[in-house]
Amino acid sequence: MSLKSILFVTIAVFIFQSASSQRNYDQRNHLGLTGGIGFFDIITDDFETEQGTGYAFGFTTRGAFYNNFDLIYGVNFVQSQIGILANNVSDPTNNFQSQYVNYTILAAQINFLVSMNIINDRLSLEAGPLLNVNGKMKIDQEEFEDFLVEGYDSLSSGDIQNISRVHFFLMGGITGGIENFRVGAQYQYGVTNIFNRFNDTAEIEKPNGKFDGHASTILLIATLYF
Image (cartoon, rainbow, N blue to C red; front, side, top):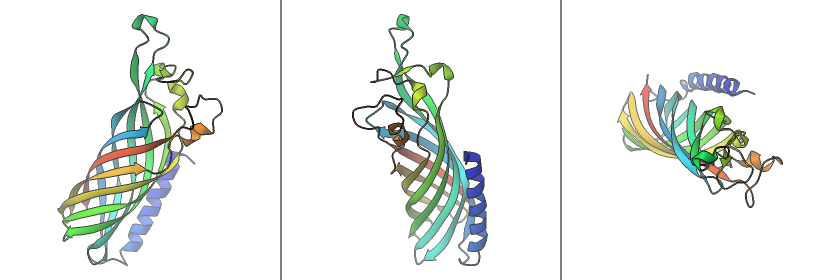
């Protein structure tokens, strides 16, 4: 199933669940649009990475659950960027100078979060799991595909695009605002190994042991509720 198909299905499920929830929650149930700027990196010993920026936007629902707790669920479309250090082995005139090769990852995320209201419903701590389905780690400029990844003898920048597709994240964050508008910050950590697919690919050079990497994102968000 393509990333576009997954995004369509998750949005359809979200709209259905949001409509159903109106019968179950009290007046503090809100449907909203959310968006923000992300700072993405991959925690790994296998590559030298450079943090990249990106964005996220999507739909969310916040509903009263019990006492000072709310439930939040939604779906987001996410674009993330990252740089990985590589060498231009075909250019001896430049002393085979290293540079960060840039990649872009497109993903759809489904979240289900618990929110603890600290100051009524104006300031909240939020946490919970995310299901992330992404495409390739696509190289931004094809002319860099033959660059040799730093620390490897035969692994090129083009060889590492086919990352694993389905991941689980844990998220923690804080939001604050008024009834119809909130701003906040989140930290998302990828529990699953984003490079696991490389370990099953016989054709590419392996590090000592196995490839291992975990996505790490800081997200600054704003949400408008209706």
